[in-house]
Length: 81
Length: 359
Image (cartoon, rainbow over all chains, first blue to last red; front, side):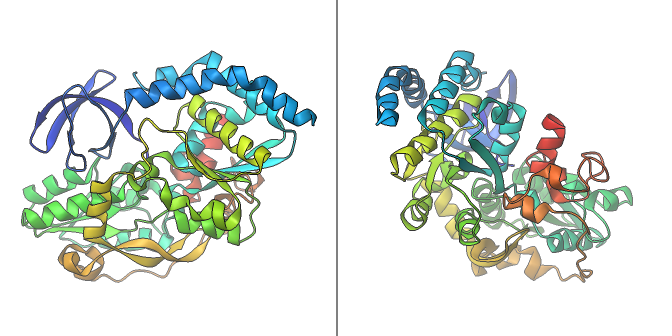
């Protein structure tokens, strides 16, 4: 029910946008978002774009996961105390 | 697909599992609240990857599952009216009511149409001016703004034959109720797309009042595992808070525009949840300003007496107290092709997800 699909904005016409997900293009409302631009990635839920996807935050998430390798010793030390 | 494939990276999954296993050997029970998480967790086999001391419980976040049978019975009654077209998301059509379902009514000739969006229902209303078009509004804060936008647009475009029948609910009262009822939960994997709309502050009471952490999670394997890591770390450090793992779309303040349109159209009311009963201020009713578009107020109908099915333990499953396999009906009488309870109908229901991926 709460499934939302990451989709790329292809074109905008007023409150409507053509978006593309996995090669399928369809129309969605951008009524619930401000400042949507062509080439933005948005989450689509029940025909509405509900949020823009931040590339910067996606990269930060990867960096955080990869950085976990380095803090292994610290956690092990805590457990041994 | 961008923003999906990269979050299924094998090396990151392996690293996260190693990290989760190295923090603590304490027994920990984490609840994924959202049905989308339940589906993803079963699909990706997450429980089989985790150390034995970490258990995942499925929660009440499948809208179809918690919707009352009375709502289905009333939708069935609406569908029997000659001048009504029912428009609904596909999930709801196979949910059994007391003596019928929308699917059965459709096979008997009822005009019941599955739509992808409330915007499709508005289009049907414009094309069928002699009919009353009722849209069945179910879902949590993720879906409620689109229903609100549909009602708002109907009023502003003078579409007078469109009506919303709302069973929309909000998540935090159910999360608090589960802890109040004594269900053992050491951390919440909090719903990602609900939080896209609401922001993170709606969960603030859970750590401060109950000492239970919340991590708002995305839906891909590395998202879910990173969220589990963050929760286990909170438990290990005895430092509970609301954290956002799903930062690429969830902002602390949420989507203000979506929140505003919900406030414009809806008002809070007490609502009934399968398994939890009536929870104060947990449902969304169409408010007075939009009452001309409220199916409950505008379209009188006689609804049959609600009868619950015998033997179905959907309610206990929704509270994380029992697993689907503990139900006598599971996989025998109750299957995905012949569901007895709502939890077997929806893809997000715990029984459906267990049956598909785990049976």
